Length: 494
Ligand code: BG6
Image (cartoon, rainbow, N blue to C red; front, side, top):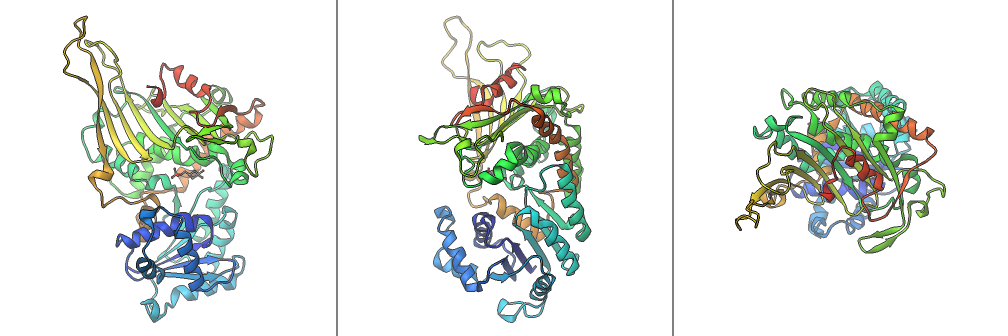
């Protein structure tokens, strides 16, 4: 299956930091279909050779194990092409169309158009409307074409709907692939496999056995050079509306009837529709927002958010959110779902913790909360099942057996050493081969906006602003109080 992959924003950050390294890994793993071309599109004039050199230099910044040898790069570079485009000019889209329709014999596909054309919009989102409508006007929207859209897709429900309306005017829903790179992470595929490829957990996956679920996406980095973008966005829009909610849908969805993309996405949408809606009062009670102050992360002193470049000195933008919600269904009624994310936290750590209920009648001394399942997304992916076991040292002086925590650890890097594929590599391959399971449908995305909007509105009306937390901590104390109200603690305090 031949393909053309066009990267709009071909010299931008996303392209060289994430997409090109992922494409190279796919190439190295022999996963890129034969007869492919990758075309980077950007504003300035440069030759294919100059572009290849630009990418080669950028590759020196990626993890050593992922860097190409000279020979590997020379082979990969043959796939790379560059084209200057002014994205407002219809004739430039006609030029692109000609390039797509008439590959040269040097490119190994003389005259024959690729089976699949993937147009990846790795540009600033304000360009999406113009690019999509120009692509449609140029006829670059045939059935063999897919368009990939990167977040942020809007900053509220109305702006997201507007983008979807424009995309829909040129492309059918199944041609528009919205990326949430968290869905490409191997741990998320393992969550699907765990839940729907094994019979073991399903009978327990409900309110009768599960006490609460915690989803944490902690980052130790600050906002870096993205201060201006971040200050307009904040943690709720940047991480909760998309990544954290997508993880929640994967945990809470009902078993889909098939593995088809729409069967899965229908179930995810039902979860989003079942989330308890926020009111101004419940936002104040169930949502904690924070902003980092100066502190120490990984042994280094770091500045406060307000001291970061391009951040206004009086900003009330949140860099941390913790919230409590419920999925209103027979399966989940009454089970708290805690979501938490933040920058400049104690560690880079993304995990989902499923806390099972305590034993109904204890006969051993010590803790009653025995079981939890931890799905680790980052820094390593894996699964841990925590149990209590007898150490074998005999009973304590009062005659009672004391149990100790042990865990069954599944380390997927060890179990499948040659099969590990990064999130962007997986999603790019899925975009090329047309597997839509891991892309977000427009109705899911809009429903997620609908759910977070009351929080944004309540914050607009609130004069207190975010609570400070010291960089390198686990966020404001109010986040611990939020779970303590239900008699719970966050995973790192257990
Ligand atoms: C992006 C956010 O979507 O995800 C960033 O815009 C964040 O702010 C990043 O740092 C985190 O992704 P990952 O894969 O490094 O956890």
